Structures are given as structure tokens and as C-alpha cells.
Length: 159
Image 1 (tube, rainbow, N blue to C red):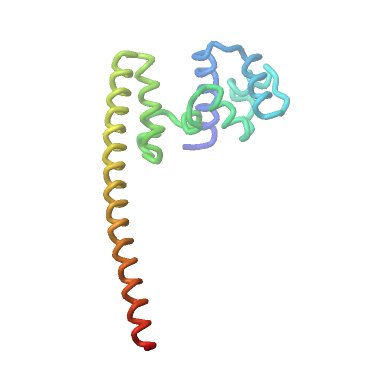
Image 2: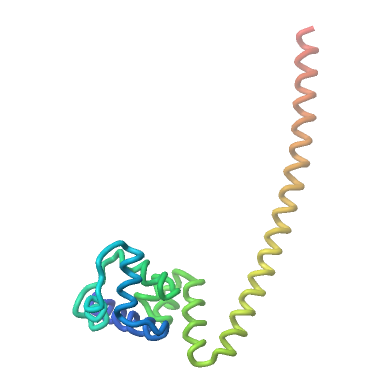
């Protein structure tokens, strides 16, 4: 992917997510200014959306926070995220968000299914942790006994 494509993608995403959030360019500029502490106006937003100005890097996390998305979603489409497979959760979020625009019921169902699977995984991890703690306690008890035996042997050898 070349840089012009990335800037076009970011421009389209800023415009898209701003419309999704139903906020004006001026409101977006104000939110960016609040988060970054840097001056930003509606004209700058217009230039970002029309690819006439490059987005400052420190605006990326601010935009992600404002839009409620991952930073990767500003740079890549859901398909590109799938191809790179670098962020499985980010890809799933992008998929659900995309599906939510076309079929909200299915998106909610899939998201719920993913949450239930995650809950099962967490429960399995908790069980593994419990077993590890039990094993550690057993080994700790054995270690204490070995230390006592070593002390006793040390005393006997001194006598």
C-alpha cells in the first residue's frame, strides 16, 4: 500500500466516522483540540477529509478515541486488517462495526457469541490458575520439609 492510498483511506475514514457520530467539522476540531492541546479548526478537518493536508500523527489516537475505534481502523479497511492478521481483536471489532451498518441484529448476535466464547476461555484460564496454585502450595510444603530436614542434618553433623 502506498502513502497516497493511506492518506485517501484516512481521509475517507475521518469523513465516514464523523458522519456516523453525527458531529460537524467544527465539533470534531474542538474535540481534537481538547484532547491534543493543539489548535485545530474546521478548515483543517475539511483539508484532512479531502486529502489536501496530512494528518498530524498525534491526532491519530485522538481521532480513534473520539470515534470509538482502533487506530488501525483509521489506516486499514476490515479486509486489509484480515490480510495482515496482526490484530485479531481489532479485526473482529472492524468486522462487527461493518456488519452493524448492514445487519445490526447479526452483528449483535456474533458479538454476543464472541463474548460468551471469551467468558469460557477466561473460566478455563481461572481453572488452570487454580491448579497451578495448588501445585505451588504442594511444592512449597515439600520445600519447607526439605529445609527442616537439612537443618536437622546440619545440627547432627555439627554434633
